[in-house]
Image 1 (spheres, rainbow, N blue to C red):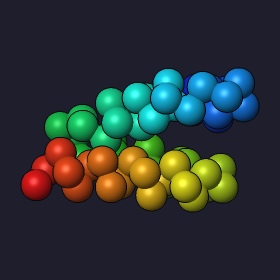
Image 2: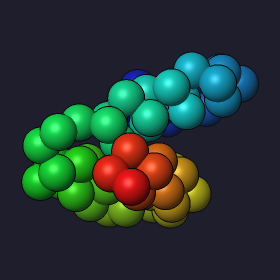
Image 3: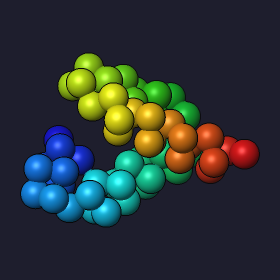
Length: 59
């Protein structure tokens, strides 16, 4: 996954940009599916970050 690769390379800003882009999708089901995939991969911090960004995009 791109987010994991960015994190492994120390590119946290790039990883967060990917997560923000995903969070801002208008297809909310897709956002939840991405969050579920991150959760399954054990990327709980990334799930929290992305869902927080998604809540800001909606609100």
